[in-house]
Length: 441
Image (tube, rainbow, N blue to C red):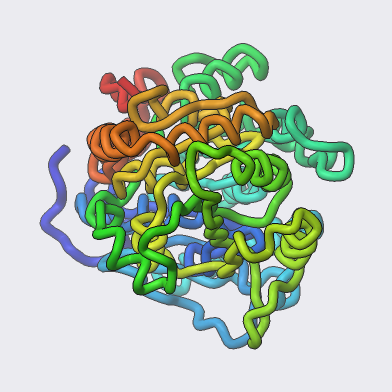
């Protein structure tokens, strides 16, 4: 598609602008700047930030809108060339539970519009992340005649199918998502199963749903020397190491990992491993707090305190060394629409043992980049972890093949696929939105 030589912002009424000159991304409940592994900060934050930066690298500026959670947050933070994170004041400038945010969404939409008027910019496509953001995109149609793309990351139905009663999503989310299936101009599914669910269960027109997986930064996440990484973290270079990375959330299957740990320890085919646990919060003294404190209590109850290192959340640029220190990465989640941790591990040349759920059924190749086990089965998880830990030739083969397999999910390919969807929408097309290339193939 040809581009206008004009390099400035998309000014209202500037008729020579190209059909696609600026995009608005919305992530109401969690900021792309949030520290990973904390509450509500995980793979979606990485996705929103990395997609925006890679779209900008293709020549498309992106503004990302998120709710202000501190009065000290600047209105605009530039995170990479031509990508701004914009803090929108909607409700008190403090952290709030997701369940309290829906009444604030009309104010959020109004403040987005006021920002665009102050800056003199328009947006050719709106990309909403999560259901709360999708409702904002819908409300923006009162002011803007702009198509919007919706990515749920997880749906209430998918999450409730694997959650206990106490962790089920509210009826309001189910109802709003049901409306967004029809309101959005395009839906991005992270894996083929999710696309099938959107089409068949939720009766979404086939032509609206595109399967585009999230990506992985294969320059950042790359194989590193294991001994060097272990020395940097303070691990014994001769130990066996199992790594977990993720939020402390029931959907991450941490209970299954804890149940599997004694079974792995009792396996005599290898020495008992050290578990490196990245995620959750530590206080100033390094003591686990919040949900991570409960993990620590459970580990202590199993008599495995000396085998678990709870290091809390870590910056993304430090994660490759944690992956590099591991022999195997455990991803025992109850559901993952993509399984970013699994693909990051693969890109670092580390085998993965993951639940056979969601996108991981497609990203992790059985006996190639790792093993897939039944969700919630501690014995199967333990057996697969022990197999990798006890068979060094197998581990080395999988390490090599994992790196090759992760190459399919490089961000340039993913961003190009999303850009194709935007371009079709911005030029008025509502059919044939999706790329022909299957990144899962």
